[in-house]
Image 1 (cartoon, chains in turn orange, green):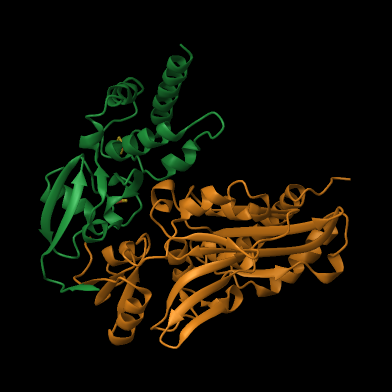
Image 2 (cartoon, helix red, strand yellow; image 1 turned 90 degrees about the vertical axis):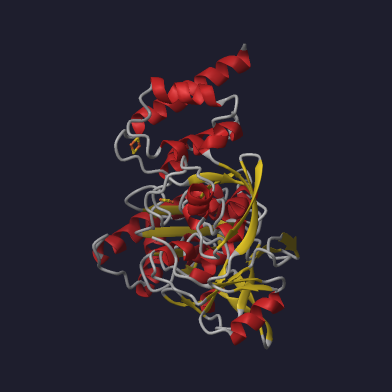
Length: 290
Length: 167
Ligand code: FES
Ligand code: FES
């Protein structure tokens, strides 16, 4: 299958992109193309105009300043993964990116593309929520910073206005004694997740001080919750503590019932993977076992 | 900014297997079709055309990529290696032999893509950073041989390389 014809624009600046989006009906931004071109080949997407970001300078930088990592929208997934591979405090990030597609798609697929696409079962939208990240956008009325929680609204739909472009994501650096874990269940390696779970934990003096637990594939967007306040200061994630934390996540789930999996199975998977991820994140954060 | 109309022919320059090509193409032409139809390099196979099967895998600026998910116009100035280019490499003989001896192919439809992915992964493997072969092969569907023979071929290649490194 081939894409339907479209006009093609090589943008040279973010302002170019904003101008095109403001004046063209049905224009689409092309980043790595790993979802968009597939959809165009199947004629599920037929944009009138395609704007490539390839020639826009400054979108492929990774910078760290004042405790925040800024990842340009055009950074490819595999690059972020190899950069974050040895950063314990971002433990779930590299691990989670490893579940996106295959090496042959992560080499081209971009961080920004995946987040703007907002697939409810995708890994990066989940990770951005678990790490309390945000999205930086640019539009006719200037630059906006949108927290991940407000950015993802419905399946494949975000807080981006039609004439806005996402230029970067921000990832606040957790404290050093943090650990993370990512678990995913799918039918085949590299397939879309049926359920994915990510957990992030920070400890101080062998006590829990902070954490996030989230899941994808179980609601219209990825969902994540903080460590419940009454678990702060605990010396261990006990079974009861894990149950309690999971109970705070469960009300946010609205798992689909489809050919891939029933909603009951999806809930069960959140629980099972959630417990595993919590235990692993705890150990990776440096937590003891007694 | 430069704008091209849908039916306009646009010049692109691509280096494929070390040779530079300049062609006039429609914006919607996929890289896979560019290689096969414009250049006649039919070693790049096309199975699903939506990023699932991996038959169309090529190397784009050194990284394995699905050529059916790239527009030729959007990889202008890129460096591409197809199976025809890999076949000119010195290491290719060992790869071909390992695939043949270990029954790593049958119909051969998936084979060019798999060979390119395997060749790149073998180059980047080291003892401290071993390749996750499940991950690499997950990007390729082989529907007739199965993966056992392919894994055996990879093992044979690694054993050989390890042996040569030690010798
Ligand atoms: S033809 Fe490109 S992945 Fe199947
Ligand atoms: S050898 Fe036939 S599909 Fe792989």
